[in-house]
Length: 76
Image 1 (cartoon, rainbow, N blue to C red):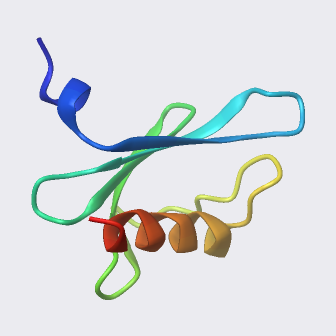
Image 2 (cartoon, rainbow, N blue to C red):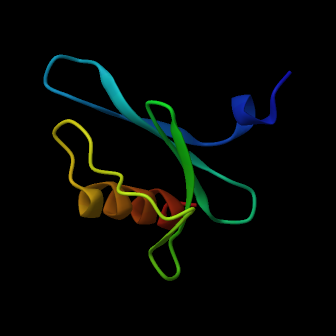
């Protein structure tokens, strides 16, 4: 059993219905983002990405993914 199964998670999808990004609200208030083989953590308090990586993919720009992560963090 994985802790990720119990955390709030949303997916960003493209116009074809394929998932481009998976965002998971982590216990410490940060948001884990997986886009393809890339896995990073977004800190919504300062809008930073660790490790530094451009999250733009498919129909979503880097800033749109950061905005989605911040929105997810605020909902909790």
